[in-house]
Length: 94
Image (tube, rainbow, N blue to C red; front, side, top):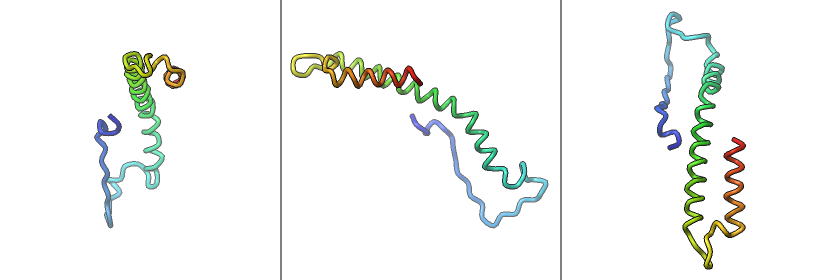
């Protein structure tokens, strides 16, 4: 999904004069305002990332319980089990 769901656009003005009555906020405050907006949006972005990680973990777990190599499920191989455990720890700690 990434940022494709975000309707974000860039705009550039060159040699533009803005009448004082049309200026929003104080000159030079744009960066501070942008950072305040990020403070409001970061929790939602983080929640989306955790949801995506949870789904990836579920898919990986399901696959590891279906796929066999060397006569046993790949979930039974220590390296794969450790990877799944690390994924679970990361998701739960988020």
